[in-house]
Image (cartoon, rainbow, N blue to C red; front, side):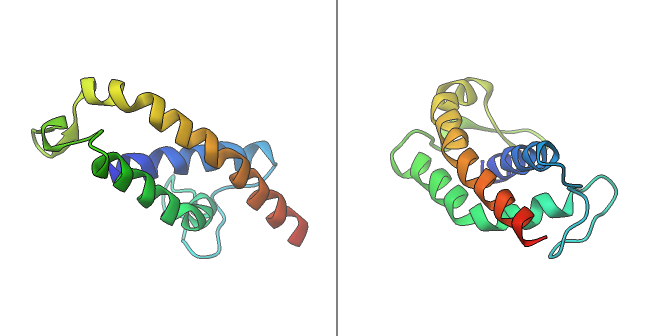
Length: 111
C-alpha cells in the first residue's frame, strides 16, 4: 500500500511540475534513470512523512487489514479494497496538492 501511495504522489508531483514549467527529470537528490523523474522524487521527500502517516492511519483505524491483500506473484491490494478506500485516498491527495504547489512555487522563486 505504501508503494502504491508513493507512486500516486510521485505522478501528482510530476504533473504539477510540468504545469509550472519545470523539467521533472532533472533533480538534485535523485538521479534520472530511464523515465524516472528525479525532481519529482526530490519533492516527494518533503511529503514522505505525510504519506507514511496516511497509510499508517488506514491500517490503525481498520480501513485496511490483512484480508484486503492478495498474494499472487507479489502482494497486491484487492480491487474491492481499492474501491473502499478511494474516498480517503482522494481526500489525502487533495489535501497535499496545495502544499505541493507551494513547494514548487518556492522552488521557482529560488531560481
